[in-house]
Length: 316
Image 1: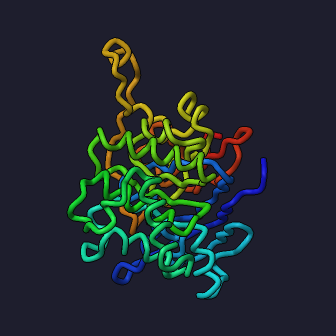
Image 2: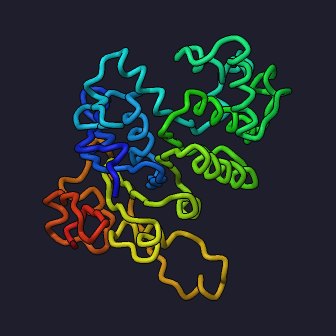
């Protein structure tokens, strides 16, 4: 394989909660290659969005290495980081909250163009119109405000804004969760089409496992701030290795009542541990049916357990 566009080693992010520290991301390791889509899945609160925002330096990492396009982001000064931000952008989860209600579409998309001084006057307007057409909108939308659009249209504006600076890498932070199901398919197909046209690389964060299967080349599974498993989409869905991944995939409904009745559903018992007081060993040990004594006392190491497959589990 070619060199990774994004290389993350030992990424850790802590937040102060009163007198305690909340470990939102713990020893996160991944390589993302040019032109691929890596899906990041896990339960609410497991740290998926924190990973995405820390990669983009919207959160300052507590420790760890983030290398993007051969530059170590954590070592860059303010000016260098501003230049690097042209290459990496984010599509936010909620299109109702992520667009400034007092700005027109032209101002929203043009803001990034102005910050990076990419175009002025007629060329600026021409570039904004080009971006709108790229995401399925037209010239008549330029002077309107966000409240005049549907959820799907607002998310298209958010995508156009992210593409305005011609990035290489996009963090898609649950970009479909606030949209109707009928609109989700349109936005997913738009993202796939844009990826082919522009050679984009995605970190796609989502809850919907069927959606992740459709859009991703590889899938990373996260639990309580830690990566549990990473594999190609085909391998992960065909033969999950980690007990948590098995439980997640068994929750996907199958639209065939005969198959649905026969298959073995794995129902997790108990609640996710308090992130302010996580288990001593494996973070999943309190809910894992396959846990042994070692799981409760020793944290498993993240390692390659098969060719191209990574997991953090004492069973391997």
